[in-house]
Image (cartoon, rainbow over all chains, first blue to last red; front, side):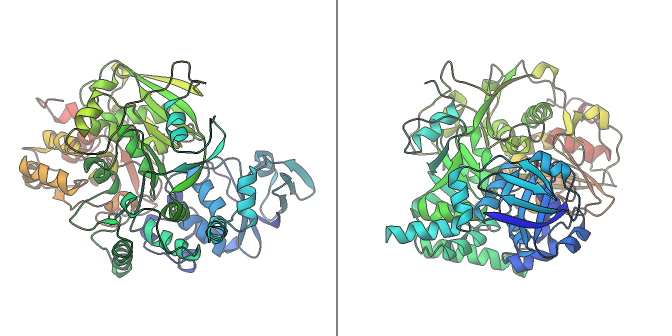
Length: 165
Length: 424
């Protein structure tokens, strides 16, 4: 899968789910309704940068905390194509992959990315370019690549159910 | 090949001949749980999957606890969906007045035994590790797949062994043990690993204290955290469950990613400063900070043990005029036990309010959220910026003695400063 977009950068490490999507809005179940609250506790003006195809560039242990799937749902609703990070918290990473949102670990590319930089990611090859500068990312295991290629766990489950008849 | 306990549990729940950390496996669940926040989204995803049936209704439990009692019409609708779905699929549904906070109730009602794998639609599913079960916190789409197939994908984690030695000092509880662990590992230090809690100090830890410890394994970034079952576990489960189970431990020669030792003789009452559970210092270092609210409750520290500790401080004393004190028993059973022991009357007499069991203000939902500029001491598990309301509020995490003492003093104090003659 090849993804391209403009960088929106969150430099801090250990950015938690609660600043990404505050608990008060967990009583919403529709991604379109979740959109206005993404980044609410961190920096609401970040939403203004989410125009067109976006690669979200993040620090270490991004998404630490809650299992709330509202965070990647809202990111997808805003047009985020990929999250490129130094490292990810476990459940946030799972949620991204399950929803078909690639979460790619490449600390060097993160360090090189300035806001607005054009980033290109080949998830199969583990290749990341920031502007013209090339970087190597840890490739995802085949199971995750397959799931991402088909759009996530929902489609994977549909196919499995169809095969079972 | 020798295995850690986590590897043994996952091996027993998968179809592979052997496994090692880093392997990707499909893990069967013995139980799937979701709540009024994670459940309705999981039901939508299940529909999108084209699935109409669950894998096994007897292995699914739903809880209305996050926004219960409903804080507004939207929350009420989520709870309506949860109940309707549970009835349609014939699964157990704990509604308002029937259970309480999901993790506490699953443990106290005998749903959880050692060696089980439990998929929980909530990050604090690691709490089941108090009984030696592998509790995996998952998002709603993962839960949807678990509801349909009874399994989830999992990278086999490494194991970090945490050894507790020595004995607890006065006014030190399970909360302080896990805060000490998080301080040692860091909030990302457990990523890709499970925490295994062992050592000579463990037999003296009650299940309530083990719940507090296992609950915050996720705050170190860990996949799960557990105490291998022992005689304390067996005594707790006797008469509570008819599920069969066997005690198991890591094999001699099993490979650990890291070993950490926490000497309890050197652990004073601790407190996590804003805005990270890893920001841990002795309570004495935060002493003197004036506070606006105390919140004693949640899935980490809302047990009868915590309420008894709070009552030991609050009985016969008054909550400081500046402070709002909120006590939240974690379950209906804890609530009734506290009622029978006279604790609730002591809380109310002291000027505290007692809430029905709920996740409530712990996650900023309702029932006591904070305003900008306010500071709270809580027995909850997260003090992220904005966690309990305004991003301009501050949350300090501590045990129930420390929280109750702060309620009386109106500022952060060592419990011993408030509680002369209180048996710790």
